[in-house]
Image (tube, rainbow, N blue to C red):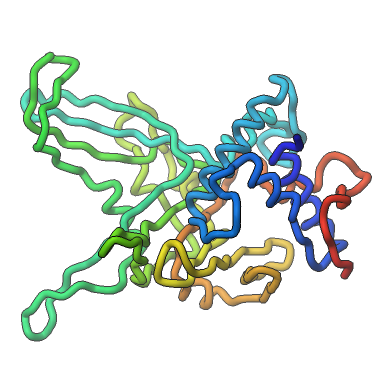
Amino acid sequence: MVSLTEEIHGLMRVMWSGKWAVVTPHTVLSAIWTHIPSFRGYCQQDAQEFLCQLLDQLQNELLKCPSGLIIKINNPWRDTVLARDLLKSLFEGQLISTIVYSNCGHTSFVCESFWDLSLELAITTLQNTSSRRSLSNSSTLFDSLNKFTATEHIDDNIFECSRCQGQHQSIKKQLLIKDPPEVLRIHLKRFRFINNCWRKLTNQIEFPMELNMYRYCNHDNQSVGVVNGEEDTVYDLSSVIVHHGNYSNTGHYTAYCWNNDAGCWVHCNDAKLNRSSSEEVLKSQPYVLFYARRRGRSPVLNRLVNDGDESGPDTKHMRTENI
């Protein structure tokens, strides 16, 4: 059985070889159906859920590589990376949860890894001219990030402090980023279960081309690790996944991707690729956003596909059309 990792690697080599205008990755689809059976068939599926399961499967396969297997890369900070650490070095970051107990004031910290941030849409309440409250249909990515990292007061449970061994009626909890990833994937929760079906929130979300995550990082408590400078928290937008439609089980996905070689944005709609402007990208309704750290310390994916075997990509299992 061919691994999904091998199929994805072959597809990347074909796509970036410059030899074909159209590639039909039917063997990649077959490998996905084999290794991720929940996505078998032609029903509408969720892009965020697919990304989670795809990366999980690829990581599990890479963990089976020999412990000493390395991949050569072109990077200012290092020239090799362990194969089993490749995806982690790109997508994995760390969150820190700070908990303050109400009675004794003890503060505890819990760290956990993350591969994406899943954010609620921030719906703003406004006052209109007739003094009636109304809901705004637009917000910003910063509103969602502020909501994600805001201090939360929890007082509907009993909490036991490991320090004083006492029981507390309430705690204060805050999530911050302890270690930002190289590639920051942000999922916007656009679907809600309303009237027995998953409906999409069509709110317009403003998002920037340049994202500075410094204010959402831990830079106060030295004992648990801090992000020292803003230069390591600046990200550039690299791609946007857009869902077209009103329901989770119907519709269509397209993506805007930054092509560094061409120096332009490209709108990917099945087999149709069109140049796009930054203005068009920023007017889209994002579902999943990808930001790449400007001062990255890990390999870049499109660099990897050009390394290794000089004999060219294996296309025997793919239908291609020459340029």
